[in-house]
Amino acid sequence: MASILDLAKYHEDLAELFFRHQTALLDGKVPAARAALQAYRKALARHILDEEEFLMPVYQAKARITPGGDVRLFKGDHVNLLKSVDEYEARMEGLDASKPDWQRKLLALLDEETRHKHILDHHDQRERSLFFPALDQALDEGARAELLSRCTLRAAGL
Ligand SMILES: [Fe+2]
Ligand SMILES: [Fe+2]
Image (cartoon, rainbow, N blue to C red; front, side, top):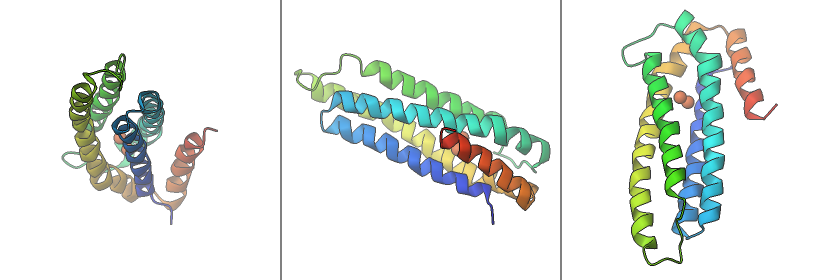
C-alpha cells in the first residue's frame, strides 16, 4: 500500500549526508567536508521543493490540519534549515586543518551545526506525526501513489 509516510526515508538519507560532512570535518578533510555539505544542501533543497510544490498544496486543500501542523511552521523550518547550511558553508571559507587555530574553529563550527541537527530532528518528528499521516488519511490509494511517484522521480534526477 502506498504511504506518504515513506517519504520520511529521505530524512534519514539527509541525516546520513550531513553525518558524512561532519565526519570529514573531524578527519580534517576540509575539501571533502565542503563537497559533502554541498551535496547535502542540494538533496535538502530538492526534498523541500517536493514538499512545498507537490505535497503542501494538496495538504492545504484536502487534509485535516491539526495544531502544530500549519504549513507556515513547516516552511519556516525549511527557510531556517537552508539558511543555516549557507552560513556553515561561508564559515568553512578559510578553514584549514594545518593552521594552529584549527581545533578552536572546528569546535565552534560543530557547535553551530548542532543547532541545525536539532531543527532537522524536530522537523522530522512533526512531519512524521502531523504532515505525512494527514495526507495519507486525506487521499485514496491512487492519489497517494501518484504523489509519491512525482517525488521519487525528482529524487532520481529525472
Ligand atoms: Fe521532509
Ligand atoms: Fe520538510
